[in-house]
Length: 405
Ligand code: SF4
Image: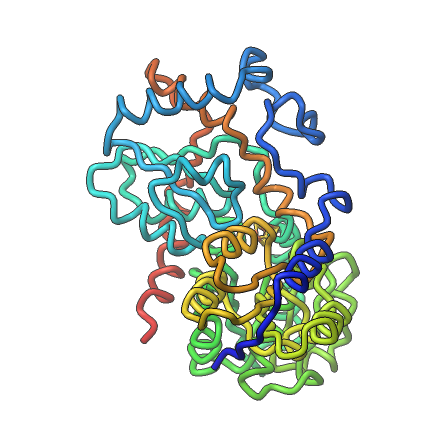
């Protein structure tokens, strides 16, 4: 049950100043501006025609609206919770990666899905939708730094090394987080494994231990560790596979002893949260509720009052009583939106200098206008397409997850 604390107006103001200082992080000043004025724009997809770079936001808005009207329900726009406001406003549906993939699947009339998220999410939507549906990612450089930490070749190498060491003595079940390339979802599908989300990770561990002796979990070590620990597996029965080192930097004995082998990947956004930030928030505002995402470190999750997926964070804060205060450990766009939607509660991000998910931030309205203009002319640009074999085995892994009780 959430605690309620009384904060007077002056204290609230002091809190917001302290925890949302726009001078500390340039991307906190998330003013909508033309694409060419954004600081990191040069690193983004360069084949967008130049006319879109300086196009006023009103013109982008007009073009996007025109295309949406033209296509009606043949076009569905999906927006991830971490997306900036000037993009999320175009979304027909918002959600986390899995919810959005399921929503894409459920759109009976859709011919095109415009996915305002990152690459692995668009792949999942392509896997789950009918092959005739075209899934479009507005900017192809919108990836996920965590997903990129699990290169398929590195994972195959790890798998072979584990097999050499363990042979028939132990069966390993691979689990991949949704935040991974489609080829890795296919890999787990082919090797009796399963896909998980941050909501259902414990159930997928149950699934794995009913069928095998050990789990290989990738790419996020923190989600894997937090889940295994909550299920009673001690930290000293987990080993971390460092993909930058020969044999993961592990000895055969360490692998034999481990129940769970964690890939050394992380989310750059969530790994920024610290125990010190939680202690500071509790010191500043005794009685505050702390909720964090399981991609945060084990120490942070242990120090928080509660943890869970973005959907759980939204539900918990939304259903909390008026007057309650929340220090939240997740992506800043989501936290700011929650704060805005619940003016009767105090909601702030635990890290005053946290930046948005930098790859999600690469989706700008200029890219939406560009791909939609092209679509109006019959050209599909930036289609995300999963090949037949990858689709087949990814679906096996995803359907195992969907069949969980
Ligand atoms: S918040 Fe982290 S895990 Fe999510 S898309 Fe961004 S980098 Fe990837």
